Each structure stands twice: as C-alpha cells, then as structure tokens.
Amino acid sequence: MVIAVASGKGGTGKTLVAVNLALALAGEGLEVRLIDCDVEEPNDHLFLQPEIRSSERVELTVPRIDPDKCDLCRICVDFCAYNALALAGDRIMVFDELCHACGGCSLLCPREAVREEPVPIGRVECGLVKAGKYGGADISFCHGILDIGEPKATPIVRRLKERIGEGAVNILDGGPGSGCPVMETVRGADYCLLVTEPTQFGLHDLRMALEMVRELDIPHGVVINKYILGGGGLDTWCAENGVPVLLRIAYKREYASLYSRGLNLVEEVPEWRERFLRMFRKIVPNKVEGGARA
Amino acid sequence: MKQLVVLSGKGGTGKTTVAAALVELAGRAMIADCDVEAPNLHLLLKPEITKSYTLNVSRKASIDPERCTRCGDCVEACRFEAIREFRVERHACEGCVLCARLCPAGAISMEEPEGTEVFMGETPYGEMVWARLAVGEEASGKVVSRVRMEAQAAAVEKGYQLLVIDGSPGIGCPVIASVTGADLALMVAEPTLSGRHDLLRALETAAFFRIPSLVCLNKCDINVEEAERIKEECASLGVEVVAEIPYLEELAEAARLCMTPLEVAEGEAARLLRRLHEKVMERIGLPASQKGTLH
Figure 1 (cartoon, rainbow over the protein chains, first blue to last red):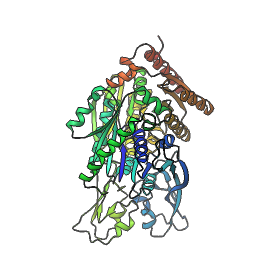
Figure 2 (spheres, one colour):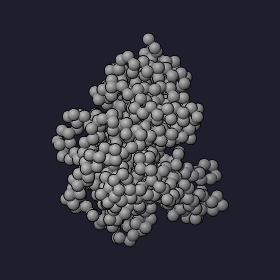
Figure 3 (tube, rainbow over the protein chains, first blue to last red):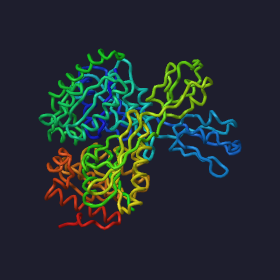
C-alpha cells in the first residue's frame, strides 16, 4: 500500500510523521519503503542515516535545433505551450528551463530539424536504513535531489514513484504546499496523512490540502502536531468537516529539541512507537472501506 | 524601487512573521505574498480587498468519448502518461496540447481549470498582492510571476521605494519565480539539523541567481550547537547573520492571535526586529524609517 504524507504548510512535521511511522512499522518486521519526495529540500535522510547504495541522474530531454535543416517555419514556436522556443532573428532559441519535455516540437517539425538532448535536472539515490533500536526489519530508502537553479521538481517525483514496491508499505513524504510536485506525490496513493498545526496558518493551509486530496479522491486523515490543549479549534473544525484526527503530538520543548538534533520520537520516547502503530491500524481499515487497491 | 525577498528553505521557520515585521517597520511598502500554495501573510496584515480577478494559466486536455475512435495516437504521444483508457487524468496533464494537435478525429479539446484568484488590497502599511490557487492548479510558478508583476507595476506607478516579497519554501519553480531579479534575499532559518541543511540549499539557490543574501536566525536558542554551526557555515560563505532572535513566547503568541509581531511584541522581540529592519535597509540601500530606528 502507498501512504502519502502532505501538509499544505511547511514546517508542520511531515518529515517527523513519515520517518517515525516508517521506524514503527519496520520495528514490527513489516516491509517498509520510505520515499522522500520533497526533492527541493529532502530531510528524511538526516533522521535515518541511510547507507546509500545507488545514485542515478534524472534527465529531461530538451530540443536542440539544427540550423542547417530549420527553415524558420515557426511550427514549433507556435506549438510550444510553455514559450520555451522563440524565433530570434534568423534562428530558433531554446529556453531549457521553460521546457516541459513534451516532445511536441520534434514530432511536429516538418524538416526533422529538432533533435532531443538529455539535460540533467537532479538525481535519485536509494539505499538501506539498518533496523533501528527495536530490531525488526531494515527500511528501504529512496530520495530525490533537485539540482540548484532547476525549477522542475515533478519529473524527479515521477522517477521516485517508480520505486514503489508491491507488497510493501510505501511511505511517500511529500513537499510542502499543494502545487505540482505535491500533487504528483499524492496522486494514486491509497491514503494521505495531512499533517497540520493548531494555528490559523495551519488551518488555512489544511483547507487547501484537503481540497487537493478530495479532488484526487484519496482517503485521508489528519495528524495535529505541536498540539495544545483544545487543539486551537482544529479538533472542532475537523469534526465538523468529517475529517478524522488520527494522531495528536503534543507541543513539547523536549520533542522540538529531539527533532532539532536529528533524533526520532519512536526511538527516544518508547510510548510513541505504540501510538504510531495505533495510527497505522486506523488507516488500514479506512483503506479497505475506500475500496482502494491493496 | 528595491525588492527584498524573504525566504526560508524550510517551511515553518517564521518567514511570514519576519516579513510582516519588516513591512510594519518600513511604514510604507508594497507587499507581495509569493507563497501562493500556502499564503499566510494576509492573515496577519488583514488587507482590505480593493480588486480581484480570475487568472487562467494552465490548460488540461479533455477527450470527447463520442468522437474518440480509440486510435491510440494520443496515448502514444503523451510523455506525461496522462491518458489512460482514452480518458485524461487531469492531474497528470501538463497542458502541452500535443494530443489535441495530433488527434485525427478532432476529439480532444483544451479546458481551463477553475480559475486562480489574484487579489489586491490595502493594509495599514501599504498595498498588497496575493493569490489563491484553483484546486488542481499546477502552474504555481506562473501564478507567482503574475503576483510579482502586479506588485512591481503598482509599486512603480505609486512611487513605492520598497517591495517586500514573502517567498515560498523550497528551491524549485515558485521560489525561482520569487527570487529572480530581487535586490536582496533575507533567509529566515531555525537552528535544527534539517533547518541548517535547507538553509544551505536556499543560500546556494540565491547565489545561483546572483542575489545577495542575509540570514536571520529565528528561535536561535532551541539548539545552541546547531546555531553555532549555522553561524560558522555562513561566515565561511561570506553571508552575514544579521539577527539572532531567541524563541520568544510573545512572537508565538502573535502568530497564534494572527497579529503582526510588532502589534504584540515589546521589549526584547521588538528591539531585535527593529535592529533587523535597520540592517536589512542598510544593506538594500534605503534609509531605515522612523518606525524602524532604535528608540
């Protein structure tokens, strides 16, 4: 099964939830794959120290125009929905950073003047996290890293999703927000955990994230991090809007301090292991009810 | 007109709080919230909306089943694997129009998703532009560009000296759209292992676009060792840490109450934020306002 972790707002504790859920499940001997899809700022590896065993480049194929064949007919320029091609004087210019690599320009060129050339945009690294303090199973780990200055994160997320394993519990840690890379992360998941915090900011952004998972028709539940008594109105709001609250993580300096040092809740505070497992058990029947694939 | 962009690398470090304080201390500034995926600045500054419009920046293919002959040309051509069983998966479609162009039966048309809204409004400290993305809108970089363009045009027209841009987290498309062409980037970072990692990625991104950076360490006392490491790394990169703001309950309280920090903060927090404002204005080459000076 595939569990995506999203948040709307950044800094709410997505990484905390993804990493600790993975550790708790692996501790039970389950086959777990943790895939960090926040390719702009991947952090899961900081908390798990995986042994990286493979690294592959992710490339996009962008057009290159052969000036000897091109007759400046402009078919490619007029076609390109992203303005990645422009006629400048007596040649066609290509703006790589605007290209989405749809391949239309090369397919439509009547003179076969467009060649496609791969350009790197980032990489995907995979490896293994050795069984944690409680033994159990190793976690297989992957993350993507977007190159600095490169705008297109989504193709790397797509490549990461090829690493989803049948039969394993796949945990996909998404980036903040509700834009393209996050949509790509969440799309097709069996369940989405929405991590939020009890502030007006948290509620505002939770609403946006909820619209996203509802649009994608994915069963979902909320984790409230930095929980304060009364839930800052979030408990009530979730109840009124029919969204289950699956887990509440108290606002404690101790937890913030562990996190700041790269230490994990389920390993440092044993009761959290059972709490994360209980949350997982709540998700599994939901998944079956939702009729999603196993 | 000078453009200051406030960035964070990682979300939740206090970027919006710091941006709000800088706007308030500037007294008069044009404001652009370029975190269009999670816009929060309007919750603090409470602008009165003066104008809004619907913006369509992306298109999605749609197949008319009556006309579709199931020839498969579209499926074969689509590099985004957005067509399954002769239906378009809207969330995978990137709107390249290739399928519509190739369809021999003319069965594919392009539809615009429900519009993203762009807002302009007035706050007590200046005018503000922000946006609310349509559900399923994926072109957030384009929306960010529009928000900035609106803010820049209004700033020039109305003679603002300063444009404050609240950027989005990360280093990808929306951040690049927020940061390019800015005069100065202020990074708000928190001293955690992941915060340090993300700050370095954000600093590299700003350097890539040749934007000078300053760093504001927020909640600097929650992990003293990490704070020291960040300061050392900034020093080695030649980036100045212009403020170290401890974890102050009054700032957390301001955020909870949805008020700007200066509406609530007194004493230590107010003093530190004023000092930050002075440093930032000095670096960007504008006089610090009366409101910003030390009393």
